[in-house]
Image (cartoon, rainbow, N blue to C red; front, side):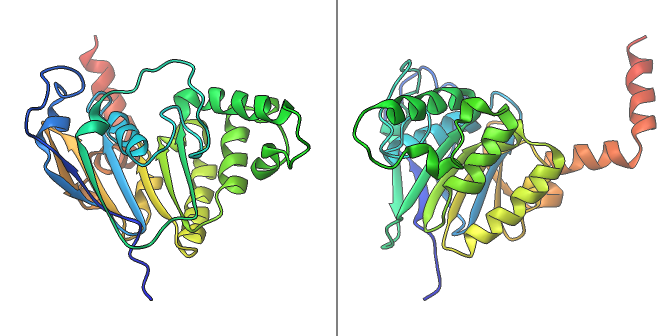
Length: 249
């Protein structure tokens, strides 16, 4: 049977929206419904348009910890997530995911700390860190710990929500990440990703939503602002830099 994903669409219940954060972010009060690709869906756009807030709300609606981790992570260092999840309706398929993870870079330190804390508790059970490569995430660099999580913890047959995963990865690792994503897609994984990376955004046949000008628009890869800006710069960096530096004098 063809895999059609676990999450089908996301709808904003627009009646009686509060006049406060995050509903004062134009992109987050204007959309009605977004369809998810069964494999990979990207959200991209400038800082401040609501990308992270939107997928945080999606993750919380699905039962994930707002700070990240799997669904059995229930710690909280500080309650800072918005109430947006209370206004979302998620349409799901009949399939039930067997795995899932919410990765957000800004609170990944807290996730690593929670794993170390839980593994120190008595009980004799298999250590949680064994699912992350066997080495404490705090005993690695930021990039290494991200990579260890991605390569060891994700097993397929699940939903993986990633908030700007490229933030800790080199360009080479981002390219390698595309291969791992594809491997997991072949194992019935569904990804929802926010990104500023033109490398990750190049994953074929994905749905790309660009958040800009107070709306969320589905675009092709070559139409995205990220692609156009990077291509323009790399095609002629000297011209771009000359114009930039001249305008600053």
